[in-house]
Image 1 (tube, one colour):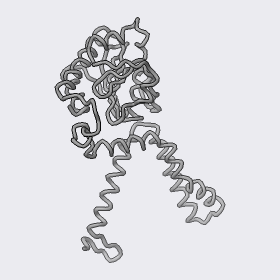
Image 2 (image 1 turned 90 degrees about the vertical axis):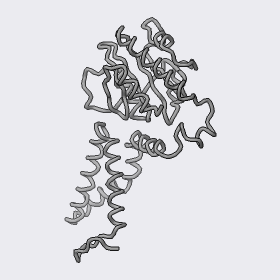
Image 3 (image 1 turned 45 degrees about the vertical axis):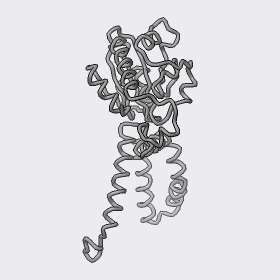
Image 4 (image 1 turned 135 degrees about the vertical axis):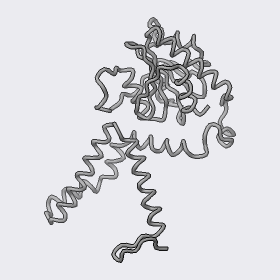
Length: 265
């Protein structure tokens, strides 16, 4: 069924659906790479492709052949260069299917999922610990695993397997503790490991005043769909790192509400 017909151009309903889906995918891709080093790489690849089209139209055969070879391996290059973004995109797709933590199919196969009340109590304990650490200006880094349990990064620290409590978290990040410099990974409602090493962000546009703790938080949020809570040792400010972006929180209630929404409690 044709919707528009200009003689030289005819659009059907399926064409509009096709264009809309492509536009949606491009928008999601832009959201994933926005503010990261991948934006500059993407612009560079698009520029090379446009240059190839111009060179090919001018029939500059040697240069066109060179650029054509480069574009020929472009798919493999994209997979290598955009590995973190592709991982995040696939996690985003998986997260928005029916296999969520609260879904009956997932709960049928996964064991040890806490009740909603227990999960909310754990979050309240974690937020209270963050507020206490903030008051004392003690740095902290807490990673909430969502789709992936981040086993690779948990293996870089010390396994603890404990229920979250304000006293336990505060003791881990106490400046005399041997684990205070690393991150705590929280998975399936339990403190899974402490003293963990996280990847650093590759975003070149971050403010210089952001220290290693914030850069590590952004790094793991770029590599996965994890939510990261950061307490700054210098200022005592509390922030969340989500999808490669920082969200500052000064209010305890707003922080708790945001965490509940992100963790879907």
